[in-house]
Amino acid sequence: MLIASDTLWLAATNTYVVAREPGGPCVIVDAPPDPDAVLALVERHGLAPAALLLTHGHVDHSGGAPDVCEQAGIAAYVHPDDDFLTFDPATQLAALLGTYEQPRLLERVERLVGGTRLLLGGLDIEVIHTPGHTPGHCCFLVEGRLFSGDHLFAGSIGRTDLPGGDLPELLESMRSKILPLPDETAVYPGHGPTTTMRAERRSNPFLRDLR
Image (cartoon, rainbow, N blue to C red; front, top):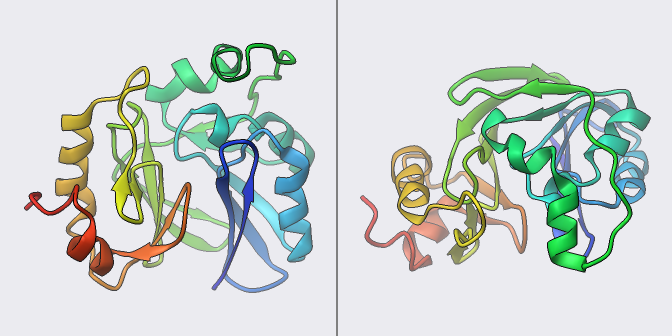
């Protein structure tokens, strides 16, 4: 399996492209407001986009989705509980930057449902609904690799002080849905370095009391 990434935009967001083999179809995981760089990552590896998976609706993960989807001719997959974020990037950009260019909105959208499986680009993808960072946050388990968005980081967890955030809900999502994953599961977070479930169980201070 090919997994390539780039760190983009002001928030240093990790964007991933995932493919079964070089030169084949791929899925893109998250698209910050730098669509040209997202598509350049795909092109650099000679891949053909099949879908865009959005872990959640914060603009640093979804702001580039309208242009990426239009230019690549694909749909964005996002959980409906994050519609208040996904379809209102202007408010988020105003809070971050003060001034902004009015962004385009997503047109091609597929709804994610937790506990379901998707077959996209030849990949078997399990949708894990992990509310807490946002109400509609989802992690994606792609054939043993976890794309954790802003739910789980190396040594930390996602913040819950933004609209829709809920710390007890995040911790319960972690306890019931993420901690049961095998130790060898590789974790590809939305920010920062990759890690494993084994490493996080041993050293992440937020997980120590979750059983």
